[in-house]
Image (cartoon, rainbow, N blue to C red):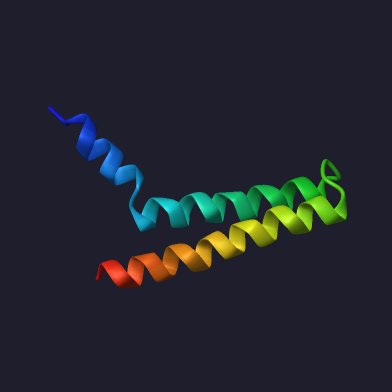
Length: 64
């Protein structure tokens, strides 16, 4: 049986954070393209995702 602490540690990993930030960038891009977001909001969401990806990559390198 998998313990709760191992699941939480898996969710806190830099790899999971990187994947979530990639999903944020993709979702922000698609929503801005279909017109759900205006251009400024889309840029803010995509920029936040890209910054998160960079931070995740730095964290991933420090774990290795």
